[in-house]
Image (cartoon, rainbow, N blue to C red; front, side, top):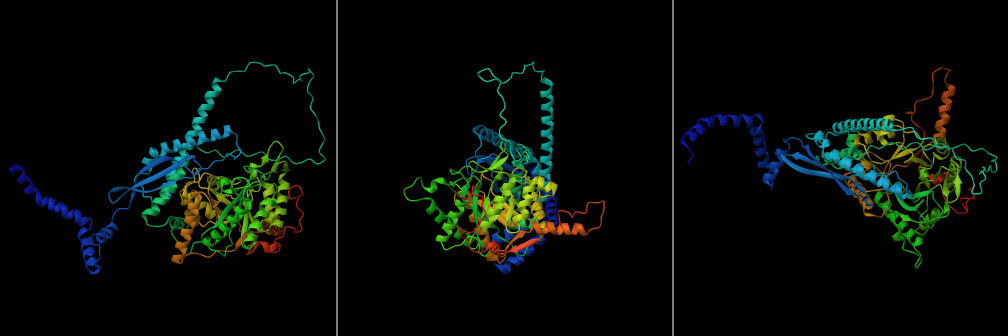
Length: 626
């Protein structure tokens, strides 16, 4: 039995407890809210009474806040380690897992790299993932706790400050290491020089060889690779995970959440689904033929088709191409030659060969290149430079200087005007040649920088996207890139009439957030690879789902005709303006933010005739085009 003294004490405290309870509920407006809920519910008489009341009172609950982050090491689509980030939030006093994302892995290493370079890259990747896990499961966990995931700007600001601090720490560490190394270096012993002699004992002379009649300009050396801080993938992964968490909590698709961010919470009435650049063939350095230039041959559906109609058409072309490449009883099946990009690997011995194959496949379906489907080529020129010879090796044994590369591309587009985009036609160091090719064919073909462009963080910092001069950029979400960086960069591209292309890295995962990024940020194209491999098809399926959702809601903007920058006319206009200005000591050149002139082209092939024939008159280099 309860002691009498205790009962008496509780009896005396009861009025005070009742007063405290009444004050607590009154201060939180519970009686008022409860009365409103009961009155409204009586007239509605919902089938699920308590569910209705729960939904009503949930509108007055505190906004969810981040309570825990979990980082994991997982595998990407090619079996390499990458990062998964899971975010837990406190929602209505309960800890809940809201969402997780997997960051696609990206590597700067070339496909034909040596085993030693591949091993070093793998070690560097593992070290970076392990460092990222330390940050996420440690200091970043504490830093982001109790923040609202809807406050993306605040989260990205903190992540940026954290990253800047880590960069400074790394600089200090390297400076200390350098001092320690210099302190222990001793003066090397004297080693007498030894003359090079032949086995016969005679000195080996230098062969002069024949003098060249024309002195070629030496190529610019390769710029040093922008340093990537070990563990930086944690910053990009967390920023994307927080954005997806904010969208999930608000019951909003990620692409709408991102569109609101880009347009300062003023959602556009309509959204455009980016045109897919679908990789069909790979004829680069990893293929068996002589051709090295065409790392990716891509198909672009016409703008008047929906994405669904365009994908269906491109699938039919792919089936035809498989039949052409897979004669019965000859060699391994073409399905056994699918690259990690999800496309067909085939060996070709000339620039024309893959284009002729495409013409044949289209002709078998009653389609015409340049009208029913357009082409884009990823040249990956930085992988072709032979620095010992100072030239690009476009075919085995066929070398081209940067100026000769420009002439070759001009001839190629003149003969095949269905090509409306070239990606990385030159190295970023060949700035003058980028300018030349833009002035020559920029009014009918997009000149896109991918590896030739600077990193996203550097582009945002410099606010200059014209190094090298180009029509647009391929944006890859990697390393320390934050969502706020993407919104700022796409605004910059839009303001300068450049196109944005969201591109998938080589090591894709099954995460489909990239598609939402492309739609929400208003990208013109999306480059996902081929229509094979699950991690790539998943993204195409997401693209189709978004298009269907926008069409159902009446917010899908119809496709717009391709717009190309007329660089030559722009330069001429600038010169005329410069000549018209009075002499001055100041530099009168207009700022780079001035709007470029545009050439609207509904059908690029109409510039050079609508029909394509293999015997079309051309002045192509006979060493390239047999």
